[in-house]
Amino acid sequence: MKKAYQNLMSSDQKNSEFSTLANQLIISTTDYYVRFLPKTDEEKEVLQEKDSLVLFDMPLDYELEEGVAGAYHDPSIPEGDITWQYSVVPVDYEFRNIEYEILADLFLQDDEFDSEGFSTKSSANLSLRNTIRSQLNISLWEKMENEAFRLTGNLDDVVDVSSNAFDDSFQYVSFARRSKWYPSGKIQYEDNTTSRIIPLEGAKIIVKRWFKWKSDITDANGDFRVGKFRSSKVKCAIKWERADWDIRSGSYGQVWYSFESLSRGSSWNKTIRRSSTPRNWLYASVHRGAMEYFYNYNTYGIKKPYNKWWFLKRRLHIGAKWKETHWFSDHYFTFNKIWWSAPVVVYSHWKSGTERDSRQIFATTVHELAHVSHWEIGYSTAQYVIDYLADDPFLPESWATGVEHTITNRVYPASIVGTRNFPHKNDLQHYSLDYIQTESDGYTPIVIDMIDNHNQSTINSNRPNDRVSGYTLGQLEDALPGSFGSWWRWRTRLREMYNNPTDGAELDYLFREYR
Image 1 (cartoon, rainbow, N blue to C red):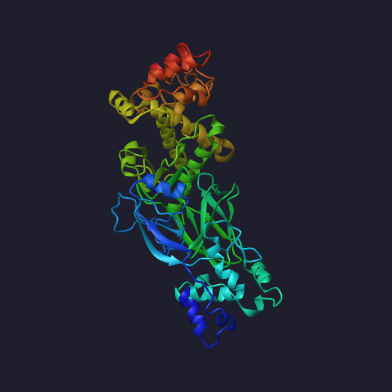
Image 2 (cartoon, helix red, strand yellow):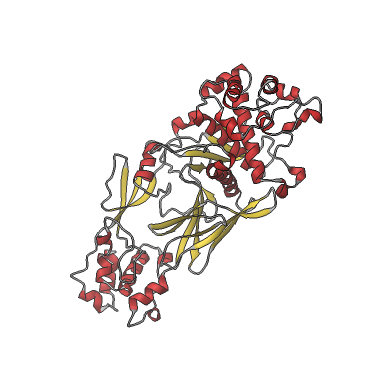
Protein backbone atom coordinates (compact mmCIF):
# COMPACT_ATOMS: atom_id res chain seq x y z
CA MET A 1 0.00 0.00 0.00
CA LYS A 2 2.87 2.35 0.76
CA LYS A 3 4.32 1.64 -2.69
CA ALA A 4 0.92 2.32 -4.27
CA TYR A 5 0.74 5.66 -2.46
CA GLN A 6 4.25 6.58 -3.60
CA ASN A 7 3.37 5.70 -7.21
CA LEU A 8 0.32 7.95 -7.15
CA MET A 9 2.32 10.75 -5.55
CA SER A 10 5.02 10.59 -8.22
CA SER A 11 2.76 10.10 -11.27
CA ASP A 12 2.54 12.81 -13.90
CA GLN A 13 -1.14 13.19 -13.17
CA LYS A 14 -0.54 13.65 -9.48
CA ASN A 15 -3.67 14.35 -7.49
CA SER A 16 -3.37 17.52 -5.46
CA GLU A 17 -5.30 15.95 -2.60
CA PHE A 18 -2.60 13.28 -2.24
CA SER A 19 0.02 16.03 -2.17
CA THR A 20 -1.85 17.80 0.60
CA LEU A 21 -1.81 14.63 2.67
CA ALA A 22 1.81 13.77 1.93
CA ASN A 23 3.01 14.37 5.47
CA GLN A 24 -0.18 13.24 7.23
CA LEU A 25 -1.21 9.92 5.71
CA ILE A 26 -0.66 6.99 8.06
CA ILE A 27 -0.23 3.59 6.45
CA SER A 28 0.36 0.89 9.05
CA THR A 29 -0.09 -2.87 9.17
CA THR A 30 -3.65 -3.87 10.11
CA ASP A 31 -3.41 -7.65 9.63
CA TYR A 32 -0.95 -10.48 9.09
CA TYR A 33 -1.13 -13.15 6.42
CA VAL A 34 -0.04 -16.20 8.40
CA ARG A 35 0.20 -19.95 8.30
CA PHE A 36 -0.07 -22.32 11.23
CA LEU A 37 1.21 -25.87 11.57
CA PRO A 38 -0.97 -27.60 14.19
CA LYS A 39 0.49 -30.81 15.56
CA THR A 40 -2.89 -32.28 16.49
CA ASP A 41 -6.55 -31.95 15.60
CA GLU A 42 -7.05 -30.37 19.01
CA GLU A 43 -4.63 -27.55 18.16
CA LYS A 44 -6.46 -27.02 14.89
CA GLU A 45 -9.78 -26.80 16.76
CA VAL A 46 -8.29 -24.16 19.08
CA LEU A 47 -7.61 -21.98 16.05
CA GLN A 48 -11.00 -22.62 14.47
CA GLU A 49 -13.26 -22.52 17.51
CA LYS A 50 -11.57 -20.58 20.26
CA ASP A 51 -9.95 -18.03 17.95
CA SER A 52 -12.73 -18.16 15.31
CA LEU A 53 -10.25 -18.33 12.44
CA VAL A 54 -11.21 -19.50 8.98
CA LEU A 55 -8.43 -21.86 7.91
CA PHE A 56 -7.39 -22.74 4.38
CA ASP A 57 -5.17 -25.75 3.81
CA MET A 58 -3.74 -24.11 0.70
CA PRO A 59 -1.95 -20.75 0.29
CA LEU A 60 -4.43 -17.98 -0.40
CA ASP A 61 -2.70 -17.25 -3.70
CA TYR A 62 -2.66 -20.93 -4.72
CA GLU A 63 -5.03 -21.74 -7.59
CA LEU A 64 -6.52 -25.18 -8.07
CA GLU A 65 -8.07 -25.77 -11.48
CA GLU A 66 -11.39 -23.94 -11.42
CA GLY A 67 -14.50 -25.95 -10.63
CA VAL A 68 -12.83 -29.27 -9.88
CA ALA A 69 -12.75 -31.32 -6.71
CA GLY A 70 -9.51 -30.51 -5.00
CA ALA A 71 -7.42 -31.03 -1.93
CA TYR A 72 -3.99 -29.58 -1.24
CA HIS A 73 -1.23 -30.93 0.97
CA ASP A 74 2.06 -29.09 1.28
CA PRO A 75 4.71 -31.35 -0.33
CA SER A 76 7.13 -30.59 2.49
CA ILE A 77 4.75 -32.04 5.10
CA PRO A 78 4.43 -35.84 5.48
CA GLU A 79 1.03 -37.11 4.35
CA GLY A 80 0.11 -38.35 7.80
CA ASP A 81 0.64 -34.94 9.38
CA ILE A 82 -1.66 -31.92 9.32
CA THR A 83 -0.59 -29.60 6.53
CA TRP A 84 0.02 -25.85 6.87
CA GLN A 85 -3.19 -23.90 7.60
CA TYR A 86 -3.42 -20.42 6.09
CA SER A 87 -5.40 -17.47 7.40
CA VAL A 88 -5.40 -13.74 8.11
CA VAL A 89 -5.29 -12.41 11.67
CA PRO A 90 -5.53 -8.84 13.02
CA VAL A 91 -2.31 -7.14 14.03
CA ASP A 92 -3.24 -7.43 17.71
CA TYR A 93 -3.88 -11.19 17.51
CA GLU A 94 -2.28 -13.06 20.40
CA PHE A 95 -0.42 -16.01 18.95
CA ARG A 96 -0.59 -19.25 20.88
CA ASN A 97 1.98 -21.94 21.44
CA ILE A 98 1.21 -23.38 18.01
CA GLU A 99 3.85 -23.22 15.29
CA TYR A 100 3.22 -20.33 12.93
CA GLU A 101 4.89 -18.13 10.35
CA ILE A 102 3.99 -14.57 9.33
CA LEU A 103 4.06 -14.50 5.53
CA ALA A 104 3.17 -10.85 4.90
CA ASP A 105 2.09 -7.63 6.55
CA LEU A 106 -1.28 -6.52 5.23
CA PHE A 107 -3.08 -3.24 5.09
CA LEU A 108 -6.80 -4.09 4.85
CA GLN A 109 -9.88 -1.93 5.09
CA ASP A 110 -13.38 -3.21 5.86
CA ASP A 111 -15.86 -3.61 3.02
CA GLU A 112 -18.65 -3.23 5.58
CA PHE A 113 -18.67 0.56 5.91
CA ASP A 114 -21.60 2.94 6.14
CA SER A 115 -22.28 6.17 4.32
CA GLU A 116 -20.22 8.12 6.85
CA GLY A 117 -17.13 6.02 6.20
CA PHE A 118 -17.23 4.04 9.44
CA SER A 119 -17.08 0.27 9.65
CA THR A 120 -20.25 -1.59 10.64
CA LYS A 121 -18.14 -4.34 12.20
CA SER A 122 -16.64 -4.37 15.68
CA SER A 123 -12.97 -5.24 15.98
CA ALA A 124 -10.05 -4.43 18.23
CA ASN A 125 -8.24 -2.70 15.37
CA LEU A 126 -11.18 -0.78 13.88
CA SER A 127 -9.61 2.57 14.66
CA LEU A 128 -6.54 1.57 12.69
CA ARG A 129 -8.68 0.17 9.87
CA ASN A 130 -10.61 3.43 9.62
CA THR A 131 -7.56 5.69 9.71
CA ILE A 132 -7.20 5.95 5.94
CA ARG A 133 -10.91 6.29 5.32
CA SER A 134 -11.00 9.19 7.75
CA GLN A 135 -8.26 10.96 5.76
CA LEU A 136 -9.30 10.14 2.18
CA ASN A 137 -12.59 10.39 0.37
CA ILE A 138 -13.70 7.18 -1.25
CA SER A 139 -12.47 8.21 -4.72
CA LEU A 140 -8.89 8.62 -3.57
CA TRP A 141 -9.02 5.50 -1.43
CA GLU A 142 -10.18 3.39 -4.38
CA LYS A 143 -7.41 4.76 -6.58
CA MET A 144 -4.79 3.84 -4.00
CA GLU A 145 -6.25 0.40 -3.39
CA ASN A 146 -6.46 -0.32 -7.11
CA GLU A 147 -2.84 0.68 -7.57
CA ALA A 148 -1.90 -1.82 -4.84
CA PHE A 149 -3.84 -4.54 -6.66
CA ARG A 150 -2.07 -3.72 -9.92
CA LEU A 151 1.32 -3.86 -8.24
CA THR A 152 0.57 -7.33 -6.83
CA GLY A 153 -0.95 -8.67 -10.05
CA ASN A 154 -4.48 -8.93 -8.64
CA LEU A 155 -6.23 -7.23 -11.55
CA ASP A 156 -9.51 -9.07 -10.91
CA ASP A 157 -9.77 -7.19 -7.64
CA VAL A 158 -9.62 -3.74 -9.21
CA VAL A 159 -12.75 -1.66 -8.68
CA ASP A 160 -14.03 0.57 -11.48
CA VAL A 161 -13.61 4.19 -10.36
CA SER A 162 -14.50 5.91 -13.62
CA SER A 163 -15.29 9.57 -13.15
CA ASN A 164 -18.92 9.25 -14.18
CA ALA A 165 -19.54 7.01 -11.19
CA PHE A 166 -19.41 9.96 -8.79
CA ASP A 167 -21.62 12.89 -8.00
CA ASP A 168 -19.85 16.10 -6.99
CA SER A 169 -22.23 16.80 -4.16
CA PHE A 170 -22.68 13.27 -2.80
CA GLN A 171 -19.51 11.62 -3.99
CA TYR A 172 -19.08 9.09 -1.19
CA VAL A 173 -22.72 8.17 -0.78
CA SER A 174 -23.38 7.61 -4.46
CA PHE A 175 -20.28 5.46 -4.79
CA ALA A 176 -21.21 3.37 -1.78
CA ARG A 177 -24.65 2.78 -3.21
CA ARG A 178 -23.27 1.94 -6.62
CA SER A 179 -20.37 -0.23 -5.57
CA LYS A 180 -21.68 -2.69 -3.01
CA TRP A 181 -22.99 -6.04 -4.16
CA TYR A 182 -23.84 -9.28 -2.45
CA PRO A 183 -22.55 -12.38 -4.27
CA SER A 184 -25.21 -15.04 -4.36
CA GLY A 185 -26.19 -18.20 -6.15
CA LYS A 186 -27.81 -21.61 -6.03
CA ILE A 187 -26.20 -25.03 -5.59
CA GLN A 188 -28.03 -28.08 -6.90
CA TYR A 189 -27.29 -31.78 -7.05
CA GLU A 190 -28.00 -34.47 -9.62
CA ASP A 191 -29.70 -37.41 -7.89
CA ASN A 192 -29.03 -40.16 -10.40
CA THR A 193 -31.20 -42.65 -8.51
CA THR A 194 -34.32 -40.64 -9.22
CA SER A 195 -33.13 -38.65 -12.27
CA ARG A 196 -33.92 -35.41 -10.43
CA ILE A 197 -32.05 -32.17 -9.92
CA ILE A 198 -32.54 -31.18 -6.29
CA PRO A 199 -31.29 -28.35 -4.04
CA LEU A 200 -28.14 -29.07 -2.07
CA GLU A 201 -28.84 -27.86 1.45
CA GLY A 202 -26.21 -27.14 4.07
CA ALA A 203 -23.20 -26.62 1.78
CA LYS A 204 -20.62 -24.15 3.11
CA ILE A 205 -19.89 -21.47 0.51
CA ILE A 206 -16.69 -19.42 0.73
CA VAL A 207 -16.50 -16.21 -1.32
CA LYS A 208 -13.16 -14.44 -1.35
CA ARG A 209 -11.43 -11.43 -2.76
CA TRP A 210 -7.70 -11.28 -2.23
CA PHE A 211 -7.18 -11.65 1.56
CA LYS A 212 -10.82 -11.10 2.46
CA TRP A 213 -13.59 -13.67 2.47
CA LYS A 214 -17.16 -14.21 3.58
CA SER A 215 -19.21 -17.39 3.92
CA ASP A 216 -22.76 -18.66 3.96
CA ILE A 217 -24.62 -21.97 4.20
CA THR A 218 -27.02 -22.94 1.43
CA ASP A 219 -30.65 -23.07 2.56
CA ALA A 220 -33.34 -25.66 1.81
CA ASN A 221 -33.60 -24.27 -1.74
CA GLY A 222 -29.84 -24.45 -2.28
CA ASP A 223 -29.58 -20.65 -2.21
CA PHE A 224 -26.82 -18.57 -0.59
CA ARG A 225 -25.96 -14.88 -0.28
CA VAL A 226 -22.89 -13.43 1.41
CA GLY A 227 -22.03 -9.95 2.65
CA LYS A 228 -20.86 -6.88 0.76
CA PHE A 229 -18.06 -6.82 -1.79
CA ARG A 230 -16.95 -3.86 -3.91
CA SER A 231 -14.67 -5.51 -6.47
CA SER A 232 -15.73 -6.33 -10.01
CA LYS A 233 -15.02 -10.01 -9.41
CA VAL A 234 -14.87 -12.49 -6.55
CA LYS A 235 -14.09 -16.19 -6.33
CA CYS A 236 -16.54 -18.78 -4.98
CA ALA A 237 -15.95 -22.27 -3.66
CA ILE A 238 -17.57 -24.99 -1.58
CA LYS A 239 -15.67 -26.20 1.45
CA TRP A 240 -17.07 -29.63 2.24
CA GLU A 241 -17.30 -29.26 5.99
CA ARG A 242 -19.67 -28.33 8.79
CA ALA A 243 -19.11 -27.66 12.50
CA ASP A 244 -19.25 -31.36 13.44
CA TRP A 245 -17.64 -33.03 10.44
CA ASP A 246 -15.51 -32.53 7.37
CA ILE A 247 -15.00 -34.58 4.22
CA ARG A 248 -11.56 -35.76 3.19
CA SER A 249 -10.27 -36.78 -0.23
CA GLY A 250 -9.32 -40.11 1.29
CA SER A 251 -7.80 -40.54 4.69
CA TYR A 252 -6.34 -37.02 4.63
CA GLY A 253 -6.90 -33.75 2.80
CA GLN A 254 -9.83 -31.35 3.26
CA VAL A 255 -11.82 -31.34 0.01
CA TRP A 256 -13.15 -28.34 -1.91
CA TYR A 257 -15.22 -27.54 -4.93
CA SER A 258 -12.37 -25.30 -6.04
CA PHE A 259 -12.68 -21.53 -6.44
CA GLU A 260 -14.32 -20.16 -9.58
CA SER A 261 -14.49 -16.53 -10.67
CA LEU A 262 -17.77 -14.66 -10.41
CA SER A 263 -18.34 -11.23 -11.95
CA ARG A 264 -20.54 -8.51 -10.56
CA GLY A 265 -24.09 -8.93 -11.82
CA SER A 266 -23.82 -12.71 -12.14
CA SER A 267 -24.84 -15.53 -9.80
CA TRP A 268 -22.81 -18.58 -8.90
CA ASN A 269 -25.31 -21.24 -9.94
CA LYS A 270 -23.95 -24.78 -9.99
CA THR A 271 -25.45 -28.19 -10.58
CA ILE A 272 -23.12 -30.89 -9.31
CA ARG A 273 -23.37 -33.78 -11.76
CA ARG A 274 -21.79 -37.19 -11.81
CA SER A 275 -20.71 -36.73 -15.43
CA SER A 276 -19.06 -33.31 -15.14
CA THR A 277 -17.39 -33.32 -11.71
CA PRO A 278 -17.53 -36.90 -10.37
CA ARG A 279 -15.53 -36.35 -7.21
CA ASN A 280 -17.55 -33.32 -6.17
CA TRP A 281 -20.64 -35.40 -6.91
CA LEU A 282 -19.29 -38.06 -4.52
CA TYR A 283 -18.60 -35.43 -1.84
CA ALA A 284 -22.09 -33.98 -2.30
CA SER A 285 -23.60 -37.47 -2.00
CA VAL A 286 -21.75 -38.10 1.27
CA HIS A 287 -22.67 -34.60 2.43
CA ARG A 288 -26.38 -35.35 1.93
CA GLY A 289 -26.18 -38.46 4.10
CA ALA A 290 -24.32 -36.61 6.83
CA MET A 291 -26.73 -33.68 6.70
CA GLU A 292 -29.76 -35.94 7.08
CA TYR A 293 -28.35 -37.81 10.08
CA PHE A 294 -26.75 -34.84 11.85
CA TYR A 295 -29.61 -32.40 11.40
CA ASN A 296 -32.74 -34.58 11.24
CA TYR A 297 -31.92 -37.24 13.83
CA ASN A 298 -34.80 -36.04 16.00
CA THR A 299 -37.21 -36.98 13.23
CA TYR A 300 -36.25 -40.62 13.77
CA GLY A 301 -36.22 -40.41 17.56
CA ILE A 302 -32.52 -41.21 17.76
CA LYS A 303 -29.37 -39.45 18.95
CA LYS A 304 -27.07 -37.18 16.99
CA PRO A 305 -24.36 -39.45 15.61
CA TYR A 306 -21.42 -37.42 16.82
CA ASN A 307 -21.41 -34.59 19.33
CA LYS A 308 -18.68 -32.03 19.70
CA TRP A 309 -20.29 -31.36 23.05
CA TRP A 310 -17.06 -30.82 24.92
CA PHE A 311 -14.95 -27.87 23.91
CA LEU A 312 -12.33 -28.43 21.21
CA LYS A 313 -13.39 -32.00 20.46
CA ARG A 314 -12.19 -32.74 16.97
CA ARG A 315 -14.45 -32.79 13.94
CA LEU A 316 -15.45 -36.18 12.59
CA HIS A 317 -13.39 -36.82 9.47
CA ILE A 318 -15.29 -38.63 6.71
CA GLY A 319 -13.12 -40.01 3.92
CA ALA A 320 -14.72 -40.19 0.47
CA LYS A 321 -12.65 -42.29 -1.94
CA TRP A 322 -13.25 -42.42 -5.67
CA LYS A 323 -12.34 -46.07 -6.08
CA GLU A 324 -13.57 -49.62 -5.56
CA THR A 325 -14.00 -50.96 -2.06
CA HIS A 326 -11.31 -53.28 -0.74
CA TRP A 327 -11.63 -56.43 1.32
CA PHE A 328 -12.58 -54.30 4.35
CA SER A 329 -15.12 -52.25 2.35
CA ASP A 330 -16.62 -49.03 3.76
CA HIS A 331 -15.76 -48.75 7.40
CA TYR A 332 -15.57 -46.97 10.70
CA PHE A 333 -12.14 -47.51 12.27
CA THR A 334 -11.81 -45.67 15.57
CA PHE A 335 -8.07 -46.21 15.80
CA ASN A 336 -7.60 -44.01 12.71
CA LYS A 337 -8.14 -41.08 15.08
CA ILE A 338 -4.75 -41.76 16.63
CA TRP A 339 -2.97 -40.39 13.56
CA TRP A 340 -5.74 -37.94 12.53
CA SER A 341 -6.85 -40.08 9.61
CA ALA A 342 -10.52 -40.35 8.62
CA PRO A 343 -12.22 -42.97 10.83
CA VAL A 344 -15.20 -43.12 8.45
CA VAL A 345 -14.51 -44.06 4.84
CA VAL A 346 -17.05 -44.33 2.03
CA TYR A 347 -16.22 -45.59 -1.46
CA SER A 348 -17.72 -44.59 -4.81
CA HIS A 349 -17.73 -48.08 -6.32
CA TRP A 350 -18.57 -51.61 -5.28
CA LYS A 351 -15.84 -54.26 -5.14
CA SER A 352 -16.91 -55.37 -8.62
CA GLY A 353 -16.07 -51.92 -9.99
CA THR A 354 -19.72 -51.00 -10.50
CA GLU A 355 -20.46 -47.39 -9.64
CA ARG A 356 -22.76 -46.67 -6.73
CA ASP A 357 -25.71 -44.40 -7.34
CA SER A 358 -26.92 -41.50 -5.19
CA ARG A 359 -29.10 -43.60 -2.90
CA GLN A 360 -26.39 -46.21 -2.35
CA ILE A 361 -23.77 -43.63 -1.34
CA PHE A 362 -26.31 -41.83 0.86
CA ALA A 363 -27.25 -45.13 2.55
CA THR A 364 -23.64 -46.18 3.05
CA THR A 365 -22.84 -42.84 4.68
CA VAL A 366 -25.80 -43.26 7.05
CA HIS A 367 -24.74 -46.84 7.86
CA GLU A 368 -21.21 -45.78 8.83
CA LEU A 369 -22.50 -42.84 10.88
CA ALA A 370 -24.74 -45.28 12.75
CA HIS A 371 -21.53 -47.05 13.80
CA VAL A 372 -20.14 -43.71 14.96
CA SER A 373 -23.27 -43.14 17.03
CA HIS A 374 -23.07 -46.65 18.50
CA TRP A 375 -19.49 -46.05 19.61
CA GLU A 376 -20.50 -42.69 21.08
CA ILE A 377 -23.12 -44.53 23.14
CA GLY A 378 -20.46 -46.77 24.58
CA TYR A 379 -19.78 -49.69 22.26
CA SER A 380 -16.06 -50.23 21.71
CA THR A 381 -13.56 -51.56 19.23
CA ALA A 382 -12.52 -54.14 21.83
CA GLN A 383 -16.08 -55.48 21.98
CA TYR A 384 -16.25 -55.48 18.18
CA VAL A 385 -13.12 -57.64 18.01
CA ILE A 386 -14.59 -60.02 20.58
CA ASP A 387 -17.84 -60.26 18.61
CA TYR A 388 -15.98 -60.73 15.34
CA LEU A 389 -13.74 -63.50 16.67
CA ALA A 390 -16.57 -65.26 18.49
CA ASP A 391 -18.84 -65.34 15.46
CA ASP A 392 -19.78 -62.23 13.47
CA PRO A 393 -20.40 -58.65 14.61
CA PHE A 394 -24.18 -59.16 14.65
CA LEU A 395 -24.90 -56.40 17.16
CA PRO A 396 -23.16 -53.41 15.50
CA GLU A 397 -23.92 -54.43 11.93
CA SER A 398 -27.56 -55.24 12.59
CA TRP A 399 -28.03 -51.89 14.33
CA ALA A 400 -26.35 -49.91 11.55
CA THR A 401 -28.34 -51.84 8.92
CA GLY A 402 -31.59 -50.91 10.67
CA VAL A 403 -30.70 -47.20 10.87
CA GLU A 404 -29.62 -47.20 7.23
CA HIS A 405 -32.89 -48.85 6.18
CA THR A 406 -35.08 -46.46 8.18
CA ILE A 407 -33.42 -43.16 7.20
CA THR A 408 -32.83 -44.05 3.56
CA ASN A 409 -36.40 -45.16 2.96
CA ARG A 410 -37.73 -41.92 4.42
CA VAL A 411 -35.55 -39.82 2.12
CA TYR A 412 -36.18 -42.15 -0.84
CA PRO A 413 -39.85 -43.16 -0.50
CA ALA A 414 -41.76 -45.25 -3.01
CA SER A 415 -43.41 -42.11 -4.37
CA ILE A 416 -39.98 -40.98 -5.62
CA VAL A 417 -38.13 -44.19 -6.50
CA GLY A 418 -41.13 -46.25 -7.55
CA THR A 419 -42.62 -49.32 -5.90
CA ARG A 420 -40.26 -51.67 -7.76
CA ASN A 421 -37.22 -49.95 -6.26
CA PHE A 422 -38.66 -49.65 -2.75
CA PRO A 423 -37.65 -50.23 -0.06
CA HIS A 424 -33.91 -49.76 -0.11
CA LYS A 425 -32.31 -53.19 0.28
CA ASN A 426 -35.69 -54.81 -0.15
CA ASP A 427 -34.03 -58.21 -0.10
CA LEU A 428 -33.28 -57.90 3.63
CA GLN A 429 -36.59 -59.48 4.51
CA HIS A 430 -36.26 -61.96 1.69
CA TYR A 431 -33.31 -63.64 3.40
CA SER A 432 -33.81 -67.23 4.40
CA LEU A 433 -33.08 -68.08 8.00
CA ASP A 434 -30.17 -70.25 6.85
CA TYR A 435 -28.67 -67.31 4.91
CA ILE A 436 -28.91 -64.99 7.91
CA GLN A 437 -27.18 -67.55 10.12
CA THR A 438 -24.38 -68.52 7.74
CA GLU A 439 -23.78 -65.82 5.13
CA SER A 440 -25.09 -62.45 6.33
CA ASP A 441 -21.83 -61.54 8.15
CA GLY A 442 -24.00 -60.02 10.86
CA TYR A 443 -26.03 -57.74 8.57
CA THR A 444 -29.42 -58.97 9.74
CA PRO A 445 -32.92 -57.42 9.44
CA ILE A 446 -33.59 -57.71 13.18
CA VAL A 447 -34.08 -53.95 13.71
CA ILE A 448 -36.59 -53.82 10.87
CA ASP A 449 -38.32 -56.93 12.20
CA MET A 450 -38.68 -55.50 15.71
CA ILE A 451 -40.33 -52.35 14.32
CA ASP A 452 -42.68 -53.59 11.58
CA ASN A 453 -45.63 -55.94 11.76
CA HIS A 454 -44.66 -58.00 8.71
CA ASN A 455 -43.96 -61.71 9.20
CA GLN A 456 -41.92 -62.78 6.21
CA SER A 457 -42.47 -66.51 6.92
CA THR A 458 -46.08 -66.14 5.77
CA ILE A 459 -44.69 -65.63 2.25
CA ASN A 460 -41.92 -68.21 2.39
CA SER A 461 -41.55 -70.76 5.18
CA ASN A 462 -37.75 -70.70 4.82
CA ARG A 463 -37.74 -67.12 6.06
CA PRO A 464 -37.75 -66.13 9.76
CA ASN A 465 -40.99 -66.46 11.70
CA ASP A 466 -41.03 -62.80 12.71
CA ARG A 467 -43.77 -62.20 15.25
CA VAL A 468 -42.16 -59.18 16.96
CA SER A 469 -43.47 -55.68 16.31
CA GLY A 470 -44.15 -52.30 17.88
CA TYR A 471 -40.69 -51.09 18.91
CA THR A 472 -39.43 -47.70 17.75
CA LEU A 473 -35.97 -46.98 16.43
CA GLY A 474 -35.36 -44.72 19.45
CA GLN A 475 -36.29 -47.49 21.88
CA LEU A 476 -33.95 -49.92 20.16
CA GLU A 477 -31.14 -47.36 20.35
CA ASP A 478 -31.75 -46.59 24.03
CA ALA A 479 -31.56 -50.28 24.83
CA LEU A 480 -28.21 -50.79 23.10
CA PRO A 481 -25.67 -52.00 25.65
CA GLY A 482 -22.54 -49.99 26.28
CA SER A 483 -18.97 -51.19 26.31
CA PHE A 484 -18.65 -54.98 26.54
CA GLY A 485 -22.39 -55.36 26.04
CA SER A 486 -23.45 -58.45 24.14
CA TRP A 487 -26.13 -59.35 21.61
CA TRP A 488 -28.11 -61.01 24.40
CA ARG A 489 -27.71 -58.03 26.69
CA TRP A 490 -29.54 -55.97 24.07
CA ARG A 491 -32.45 -58.42 24.23
CA THR A 492 -32.50 -58.30 28.02
CA ARG A 493 -32.48 -54.51 28.15
CA LEU A 494 -35.38 -54.31 25.71
CA ARG A 495 -37.39 -56.58 27.97
CA GLU A 496 -36.44 -54.62 31.10
CA MET A 497 -37.02 -51.15 29.68
CA TYR A 498 -40.26 -51.52 27.73
CA ASN A 499 -43.60 -53.21 28.02
CA ASN A 500 -44.05 -54.81 24.62
CA PRO A 501 -46.52 -57.70 24.18
CA THR A 502 -44.11 -59.45 21.79
CA ASP A 503 -41.05 -59.36 24.08
CA GLY A 504 -41.38 -62.98 25.27
CA ALA A 505 -40.79 -66.07 23.18
CA GLU A 506 -41.23 -64.02 20.02
CA LEU A 507 -38.26 -61.78 20.87
CA ASP A 508 -36.17 -64.72 22.06
CA TYR A 509 -36.74 -66.42 18.72
CA LEU A 510 -35.26 -63.56 16.69
CA PHE A 511 -32.21 -63.14 18.89
CA ARG A 512 -31.62 -66.90 19.04
CA GLU A 513 -32.17 -67.73 15.38
CA TYR A 514 -30.44 -64.72 13.85
CA ARG A 515 -26.98 -65.88 14.85
